[in-house]
Amino acid sequence: MKFKDNVPIYLQIKDIINRQIIAGKYSLGAKIPSVRDLSVQLGVNINTIQKAINELVQESVVVTKRGLGNFVTEDVQIVDELKDDLIKQTIADMYEALTAMGLDQGEIFYYIKMYLAERMKDDDQSSTNQ
Amino acid sequence: MTNLVQINNLTYRKNNKTILQDVNLTLSAGHFVGLAGANGAGKTTLMRLIAGVAKNYQGQIMVGGSSDEVAKKAIVSYSDELLGFNRQTTIQDVVYFYQTVYPDFSSERYQNLSQFLKLKNTDRLSVLSKGTKERLTIALTLARQASLYLLDEPFSGIDVMSRKQIIQGMLNWVSETATVVISSHHLEEIANILDELVIIKQQTILEHRSTDDILEQEHLSIEDYFESLYQGDENYD
Image (cartoon, rainbow over all chains, first blue to last red; front, side):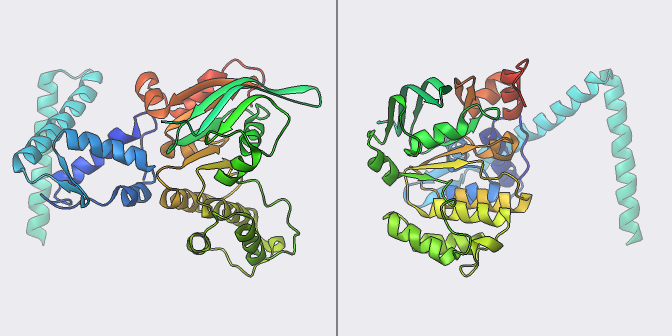
């Protein structure tokens, strides 16, 4: 696993787990791999995994069942909020990057519209070609 | 909670040369600790002192609450120990030696590790490549159920795949309550698995900090942070 080298690893692990949950790879109520398995899988030590899990438990995204392990929350609302946050964050990152290039809001809106129009056309073509 | 390693006012001289001066260091159980410093800063010496291999120091080195050398050796697994064997010795014989000498050496664990690290019991030391020797050393070191593992440059000159295997082996096999100290010239190789960083400079400990703290406070990668502390120093290599 490749990590950014200037961001605490446990925050990056949290992000990975959150994205797995949002994408449905870890479904509602499903068991998350053990701390040891995640440690070997991701190539970081168990304290780092545990720290990430602890924060996810505090944020109610993950529930620890004593003796059984860690599970994704069964509360769909929490996962919806998580997804909403991640979408907003992704757009905010893009907005910051474009603003840093000197684009104003009108230009950003224009380029996004153009891009979406092109993507829709492409997707349309590829589906009629099939 | 008692500290696993407690070093107070340690000074070590060899041949009238000061190697370490006024070292104070506390390590608790269950952590991965990186030991960084330029060549000759004293990393290997510090490990040898903690392991009880180097003697005649001033100050206090307590491991598991004891300063007794025999007690230290019982709970410290130190990596630099293939040196004493004849080149014609087979891996099997080395393993047998470890079983005899260390009561906490687990044959089952060694077999698992050696399988994982692709070591052949019938091979003689003379035919092993550098990378294979490193893997053997790691397998022997980790097959002990020690409280403290000291790994001195475990990845020097070995390929990326072997390094990944060794790191996986460590993550898989080290008990949650054990502490692993790893020295490396290439911090980026081990940064992902470290809880703490200890930096040695000018014969003493310059910094001892949690890696999360470095990343959160300094916004620098671990190796950039290390380099920033060595910057402007003539001895930096």
